[in-house]
Every structure is written in C-alpha cells, then in structure tokens.
Length: 158
Image 1 (cartoon, rainbow, N blue to C red):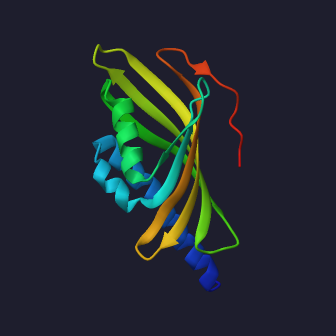
Image 2 (image 1 turned 180 degrees about the vertical axis):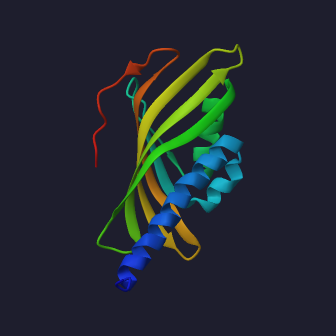
C-alpha cells in the first residue's frame, strides 16, 4: 500500500468541504433560514439567475440572495431543493475552485398543484479563514413544469 501524498489528501479534504458547502446551502434553503446564508457567501458574492424565459437577474450578497429566494418560493406550501450531482473542479490556486451542481426543486403550491424545476449552478468558491464560501453563483434553468417538463436548451458549461 502506498502512502497518500499530502497534496492528494488536501484535495480530498477540500472536496468534502466544498460538497458540504453545497449541502449546507440546500439545508438553508429547505429550512428557509436566510440569516445562515451569511456563513456560506462572501459579502459581495453575486448570484446570477438565468431562468431562460426572461432576462437574467443578479443579486449581490447573502441578504439579497435570501430575500430573493424567500419571495420566489413563498407561493409554495411545499418546497424541497435537492442537489442531484456535484462536481468540484480544481483551479491552479489551491484556495479556489469551480463547482457544477445539477439540481431539482420539488414543489407544491398552496392549491395542491405539484411542479418540478431542474437546473445547473456553476459556482466559484474560495477558501476563507472559516471555510469554503461562495464567491459567485450562476444558475441556468434546464426544465420545469407540472407533469411534463418545459425543456430548455442545454446550459452553457463553463
């Protein structure tokens, strides 16, 4: 059995921590615990949303992100954010990484009508003194609907 290289061990630990950041985000959204976004985002982090059927919008900072999401999901009696697949892509800088997260939202409005949404987050994350944080998030819708899905062109992968 060979010994694990320190760089490989560091990369594995970072990968787990970055995946933990994605899981923490999902947990915050599902619990609607918007104040906890402060621990996940850098103060100036930009969330850019391209829902594909209207002009993209941007929200800057964790408070603005929380306010936006809260307003967007208040129409649902049930809302569950699920990270389906997470891929961490390392940069040359060991304190930075890119992350692709394919996700699904399972929803039901107050009248009992179910719907789903699928999309892709492409994130820039950075290591800080307190752990990995989002420096920027870009979201593109891939499909949404009640029973069938209104599909959109494949997102541009960065």
